[in-house]
Every structure is written in structure tokens, then in C-alpha cells.
Length: 305
Image (cartoon, rainbow, N blue to C red; front, side, top):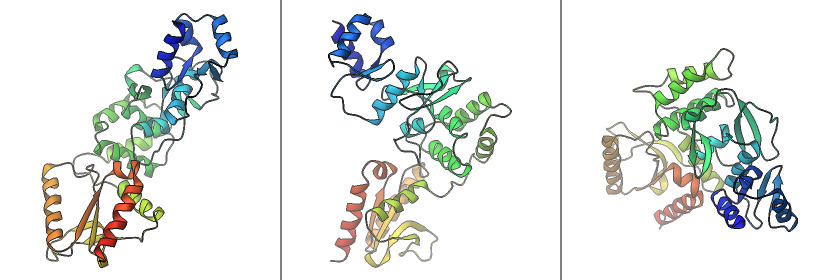
């Protein structure tokens, strides 16, 4: 019964569990010692255990760090930004926040302590406790440069990860004299609103990086519409000699139905003029960059025949 309860607990938590949790399901200290000595449980940090044979993963590391920090710990800052799929953040860092207490450091990650972490600042992603999108943006203001902060905030708002009023409300709730990053975030939020102009697309920069790493030649940026010289308009990228056009279409800035229809009309006009059009999303670039490279390479090869 005990082993079944622990196995179910581990299944929900990427194979890891804490001393506090197993005591709560009826495991005695004697049984715990026996399981560890027999190798049926593995200790990975003080008070944190794993079942053997569980492959390592970033999410497993996040859960283990939260368990090591103790009740109330949540994934935060750069790690939370990656869980929320914020632009420029990828899985890698293990950062958790806990209300001020006895902990000074973690073996399994980086610990940040907070005096203002509230329950409404927390949510769950993939079974992991994590700060909300709005709280994560406020936290990031203290650890990233202003230019990157603007990109991340704009990207999160356009992707509808949260609303401007959510971030503004969280900022107003948490700001206080001397709190790092609050003045910078206030400037970023003050510049946002109806009709704002996004900063240069993170998606486009990521696309150029993917092409470069894939060994493809650099395309022409902001290429004028070749079939409508009398009408102002540009496409994100082009290989003019191959008559290949590429749009970095994340649907983040193109959120209105009218823009969707305009994009599709432009695609039809391009095809009628003998140009091939390829569209890639932020999800494409983040999850399968190899397919993006393969598609562009094959498109260039087909055009040369």
C-alpha cells in the first residue's frame, strides 16, 4: 500500500517526491531508511527522493527544486518565463521562489526569497507550481535588461499570455521604493496601449538564427512586394533569385481578422506572380527548427529546377 501510494505520488511529480510527502501518506522513518538502503528510492537532495530509472528532464529538475525548497515554493523568474513560452527564454535555468524563511540556498537550483508572493500570483503549468504570467513579467524586470524586458512584455501581451491590465495591476501591487526593476517596468508599461508599435520582431531574429545554424544563405530582409510596385508593402524575408518569400507569421502582431485576410490575399498574388510563399510560426521555430531549415532548403531547390 505504501509503495503504491509513493509510486502514484511520483507519477504526478516527474518521478520525485519529498520526505514530508511520504510521511503524510503513512511511511515511517524505518520504512524510509529501508527503501533507501535497498536502492528502491534514491536521495537527490536533503529530504528529496526519486524512484530509480527515471530519466532526467528540465521539468523533473524544477519539481525537485520546489520540493527541496519546501511548501509554497514555485517556479519563477527565467524558469517561469520558459514555462510560459515567453520570447527569448528557453528551458535550462532552475529558479524557484519561496517566502522568506530559513532556506539560504538550494542544491538543486537557484532560490529567490520574496516577502510579497501571494496565492493569486501562482498557477500551475504541466503539474508544476509557477508564478502567473503577470507576476513573472514583474519578477523579470529585476533580472533582465530594459530592451529585453520590452520585447518580452510585448510578446506576452500580443500572444495573450496575459492582459496589460493584469501586468499593470501586479506592478502596482508589488512596487515599492527601492524595489529593483519597478521603474523600468513602469516605463515599458507606460509606452504600451492601443496603437503601440512593437519592437523589432523576436520571431524574425530567431528565424535568421535558425537559417544561419542550418547552413542556409541569409535572405533579404523587408523585401518590397515584387508584383505590386505601385503599392507600398513588404514581406519579412525573400530569396529574390529563387522567387521564394518567407513570412515570420506568429499571429502575435497579426491578430485581427482583417490582417489575416490581407495576408492570404498577398499569398495568392505572390503565387500568381510565380513566387512561392512559406510561413513559419514561433512554435515552429521553438519546437522543430530542423523542419524549418529543411522546408526552406527544399523550397530553394525546387525553384532552381
